[in-house]
Length: 248
Ligand SMILES: C[S@@+](CC[C@H](N)C(=O)[O-])C[C@H]1O[C@@H](n2cnc3c(N)ncnc32)[C@H](O)[C@@H]1O
Image (cartoon, rainbow, N blue to C red):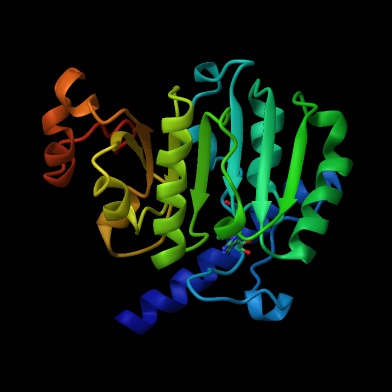
């Protein structure tokens, strides 16, 4: 049964990749590969390989109407920049920034931005080649996106950096986390609270991972005491009583 499921999953992943690749060909860009970091000479502890989000992923959890021209988008581990292109073409972000550890992926992402330029409404799109361990989150960033980029000590470092950035400049700071396997590290801060979940299409028998797209807000230390109902938000989340906007 397991082997059948694995074969089906592989076939469906390939089919999905072909479908998602249609936009690549139309836009003259390259975002659809899946690449191990060792093949790029960029492997490292707690770093995950490149695989793109789907073109529809960001809009499933962040409606374009909820972004204004004051907002700044940051994709930590942007790879070939597919989500940067979505953020810069479908939203009114003032700036869109991608951070990526692989020099080769950065080059591809920059070429993609150039090729897609006429389709982008945001003119300020930057791809920064850096390990997130050496990167300081700019204090005007208001939407952070993470998809399977890193885990363990790297994720913990990023979480500390996000809270530190908020403390330097308290502001609306949303985190979109696709496949939130390290969610516990966010919640453990007591400063990062889940506000929304959505479904990302994922072929797996594990139903829980269907709820694999989540949004959080960073708050001040007192947010749990003052926000409406907030003391129980984390507990509600753990018990499954969270806002799940798109459950079938
Ligand atoms: C699963 S891909 C996600 C790509 C993109 N965000 C998307 O959703 O389409 C993860 C990316 O994170 C990058 N990455 C892994 N560890 C990193 C680190 N420490 N610093 C910066 N980027 C990293 C990988 O090279 C890879 O391109």
